Image 1: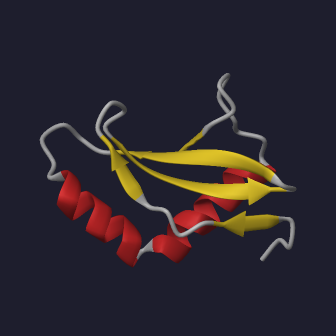
Image 2: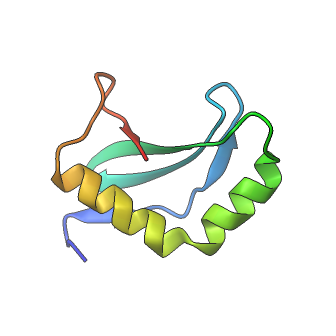
Length: 78
């Protein structure tokens, strides 16, 4: 794992964005990552699945950060 990238254990559902969120520190700066959840899907179930597969999502986020795949707000969407 990249020593300059630290993932926080803060998975949560963001209703306004209809996405699961988590954050990481990239060289000391906080970056918020989002995983979209379909409208017809239970957000509780989606959150539980994301938490269960946290390492895989963190790997995906790490790759997106390495690819500089930030949106205009400085967020990563997976």
